Each structure stands twice: as structure tokens, then as C-alpha cells.
Image (cartoon, rainbow, N blue to C red; front, side, top):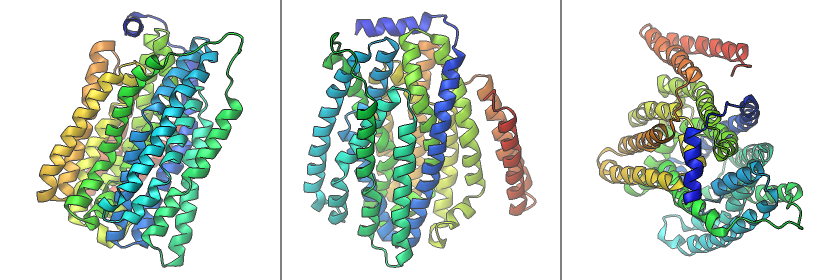
Length: 490
């Protein structure tokens, strides 16, 4: 612990100038990830749309609730290994200790494999406790594959290789799910069991492909000079992240399960559809964050404070530029957005859910990859405390508000938890390390997107809804031209 604290102290005092190659590398990795995120985000919306049109609201609610349970159990079973692998592989490579990477892989992957098998067996056995036990048993079988997929791809990102994550997970798995669901929907006689199977099956070949890639490209170093990372050091960093990872997924998915339990499967489907736009922003943030993580870990390990700060600030500008236009457009066009999934989803409550979530998600985007930066600083215990507080806040508000307000209460709870989960770690980073996301490029992105996609369309909306759409379209064209014109700076 003393050694880790010394590293972190060095971060706050180092004066090393930022390395432009780090930003260029992050930009290239982020761009590759963003291509994948665009497909995965669009694919996520398309999956929601296909489920909504192919199934009744009650059956769609069952699907969304069961897949949320699946993702929660996967988060528990992976034991925090994705973050741990990125952190340790990146730092070991920076220190010239590639021979020790094999010990990190062994220390992390075997426990995760055992935990995932145990989690699958436990969920399978607990299936009768759920309203649709056959769906729970089905998804339980694919928990080990999902855990393996995430851990193996995280190891490749520690090598700064973003391609496998994009090709195997964001493109391959997403497109396979879409293709299978599209075939089922086209038959006109889709069942919720078939839809769930089509969603879960692609995890298996994706995990096999990720394992093959890592096996082909991992180098164990010179066996004549054995090197290893102590298991206690690895799990000392990773264990808090294991719990934090479960809490993070809980923040994203537990409200769907609670709505299904407290308000019914139909409202759960309405709530999922109304909140699905959030996935676009989350995937964009995740794509940039995955590119930033290994470089931030390496910069902090070397005590390069200015490089870490610049990585954080400019990556936040990218996130704002990509997500604020989406959030503002969905907020202004909530009625059109909801009608894409069917008239039964375009309710007053659903519109209110959208309007509650949009400002909270905009604040989250403006905080950037604050969670990743805190983890790469080695403060996974802080991260665990922050997300635990946020999750407890979320659950308490859900239990109080859903019975009386339904899906609107769930939206209020989630928005409040999102704010807590971003503002607390931002305060910690700022006060402890002087790291904050509000650089010059971030401020320009905030002002330009807020004006072009928010203030101007709102001003034109007084002339009629069509004028607001025209203003949004004009803002989109202007924004695309600006991004292309300043692409080298960005």
C-alpha cells in the first residue's frame, strides 16, 4: 500500500510534459472503438425495437427483465477482472516487465472461470423464484461465455489493441444478435424464449474468438528470467473493482428489474424503451474510456500528471461532442423517438422519463471517464465506496417512488443516482490530483452543442415542431462540418 501511495503522490507532483503520441494513440483507439460503439449503439436500439414490435409489452418486459438479471450476474461473476487486466497489463508493459503478464492472466482468468461456472449453476437453480424460469435457465447457460469474453478482450486492451474488442464484441456479437432476432421477427410468430435464445447465443462464439486471439498474440516473455505479479497485489487492486462493477451494472439495470417486480412487466417494457437512448451515450463514453484506460494507467505509473490531465480533458470533449447532440435531439423529439417502437410506448409517462433522464445524462457526459480515471489512479476502494453510495441511493428511491409514481419514479431515482455517481468521484479527482475534465476543448464542445442542439431548436419550437426539427437538422450538418474541419485538432 505504501508503494502504491508513493506512485499516486508522484502523479500529483510530476511536471512531465504531455506526450502528443499518447493523445494520437488514444484518438486512434477511440476512433476504432467509436466505429464499434456506433454499430453497438445502433444495434442496441434495433434490438429494443425488434423486441418491442415482435412481442407484446408483457413479453417484452419479461425479456428486458431477464437480460438485466443476466448482466447483473455476469458483473458479479467476472470479479472485476476486466479493469484489473487493463490496469496491470498496461503498467507491466510500460515498466518493461512483459514476462510477468502471464502470471496476471493466470491469477485473474482461472478464478473468473470458476466464479462464472458457480454463478451459472446458482442462477439455474434459483430459476423457479422468477416469473419466467425457463428464460432464466436459458441465459444462465451463457454466463461463463460472457465473463470469458469480457476478461479476454480486456487483456488485449491492456496491450493497447482495440481492434479485437470492436471486431469480436461490438461488431460480431451485435450483428449476430441482430441477424438472429431479425429472422425470428420476420417469421411473424416470435416467442419470448426464441428471442432470448437469439440474444444469448452469440456470446459463445465471441468468447471462443477472443480466446483464440489472445492465445495467438500473447507473449509470455523470456522463460529464463521468470517474473510475476503477486496475487495479493493483483486482487488488492481488483477486488474492490469486482464489487464496484456489480454496483455499476446495478445502476444501469436494477431499475428495470424493480419496475417489473413493483409495477409489472408491461411498465418494465415501457421504461426500457423510454430509457434505451441512454445506451448510445454509454457506448460512446465506454469506447473512449477503453482507449483512455491503458494510457492513463501508464501515465500515472510514470508520474506523468500533465499527460493524464490532457488525456482526461480532451477525451471528455470527444464524449460531449458525440453524446450531447443525441441527448438533446431525443429530449426535443421525445414523441417521435417513442413512436419508433410503437404507439403503445408513446405515453405521457414515457415522455416524462425521457425528459428527466436527458439532463442527468448530459451531466454524466460532461464528467467524462471519471470512473476510469479514478480506477487507473489505483483508487478502486474509493470507486467502490462511490458506486455503493450511488446504488444504495438508487435502490432506496426506487422502492419509495415506483409504487406511487411508476416508471417516472424509477427515472427520478436513476437520474439522482447518476448525478451522485459522477459528482462524488469528480470531486475526489479534482481535490486529490488536480484532475478535471473542463479543458478548453471541453468548454468549446459544451457551448457549441448546448447552443446548436439545445437553445436554437428550443427557440424555433415556438414556431411549430417542424421548425425545431429543421433547426436540429441544420445544427447536425453544421456540427458534422465543424468536426471534419477541425478533425486534426480533435
